[in-house]
Image (cartoon, rainbow, N blue to C red; front, side, top):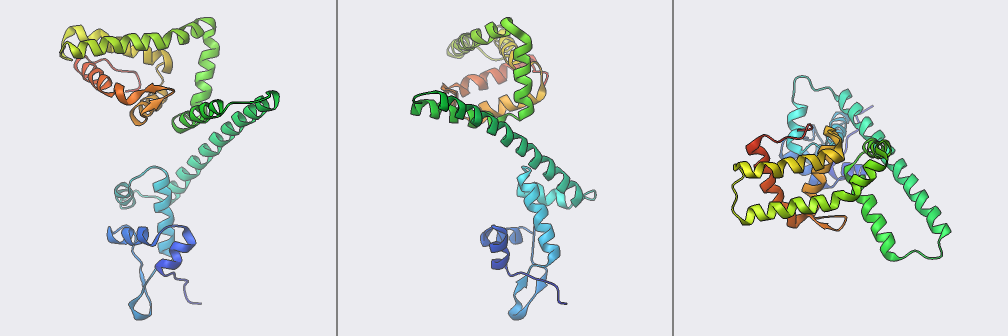
Length: 252
């Protein structure tokens, strides 16, 4: 029985990928059709499909195409490990969806108990859920909730004071910038130390929480009504101060 082969259009239709993407993989030497058909048509074999699966898995794990190519040429490359990693990622995503389902169920209960819910309430709920689910894993959210519960009234008080403390810090950072205070100046060091204290109060020194928090503030222009984009010059200054004085979060 002849081996099953696919033309580029057939493979694109079957996988949901575009012909353009498959041509690009070929052009960069990542995946090339290894069989020849009539009229010199290049055809994909079962082995090519297996390699394509690996490429798609690695892309969904966050690898760039350049990283995929480099990884798949390593001497210790193991396709089974890629499948295991992808499986773990899918299970993590399933857990996130379960968590989101619980939140939606709670919202549905609230809707059943209310006469009317404003559009703003829906928008705020969507914004918060999207932001949280995008950057924090279910395990991290559970960890934050447990820390808050364990902290009791003292933790609640710290949370209530936190927005003003952040506002005060950034006000002082802006003043330092306006005054032309170099990051290397000893007078700038307390700014970085206050930053560390506020961040550590949220993360509890956990490296994973720190990484998620940092990624969110680096990637988003607005976080819960805060104009993060406008704060970036202040954060860049703080980064220079931290580097100059060795002020580091435990997660770094």
